[in-house]
Length: 188
Ligand SMILES: *[C@@H]1O[C@H](CO)[C@@H](O)[C@H](O)[C@H]1NC(C)=O
Ligand SMILES: *[C@@H]1O[C@H](CO)[C@@H](O)[C@H](O)[C@H]1NC(C)=O
Ligand SMILES: *[C@@H]1O[C@H](CO)[C@@H](O)[C@H](O)[C@H]1NC(C)=O
Image 1 (cartoon, helix red, strand yellow):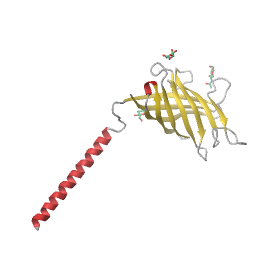
Image 2 (tube, helix red, strand yellow):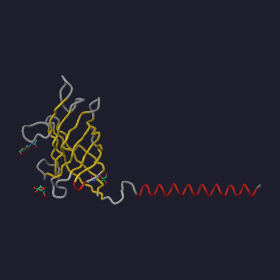
Image 3 (tube, helix red, strand yellow):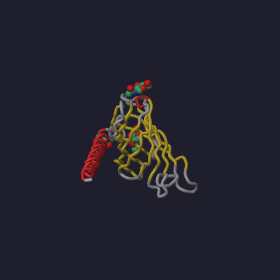
Image 4 (spheres, rainbow, N blue to C red):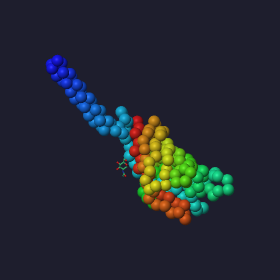
């Protein structure tokens, strides 16, 4: 009787130790493989996006549709924009262009505080010339937000990843925003 109980305790405690070890090792391997996909390269880069909705020259974005009898602008739910935003290496408008963000965004939150962003990053710099990244996500009107990299072409075939966006300049009268992008992408 007593021997049986001891044996049972021994079996149960070794089972507990086994489970504990299994949990520990799966935690460790999960941490080690966080954001790590087999045989994929990780590329990180930063650039600045210029989104300018006013002015005769340099216009990069246009409101093309919206709710009837409402103003078609960034702070109105339902307004659709087409953009060809300039992407530069550094902060300034005149800094070296590295590509364009071509596509559209739609104010898609009823309180008007977020847009759905759907653009191709079309690169023209030396490193990624001709390659593209497909971006999609909720682009909230907060200083920082994150959108998805859902795929790509050229050097970025089958890519996926994410980008953190930070509004670094917002000129309301000019309707001019400069957004810093920090992209993390996994690709072949
Ligand atoms: C628009 O382009 C002109 C000429 O290239 C430049 O001088 C001006 O600073 C630009 N405007 C803005 C708001 O970037
Ligand atoms: C990018 O590719 C185009 C077309 O092949 C070429 O004309 C251009 O010079 C290239 N740009 C750079 C920076 O390599
Ligand atoms: C970009 O984002 C990555 C991952 O989120 C972060 O580790 C890195 O420090 C950031 N780099 C810059 C230059 O902001």
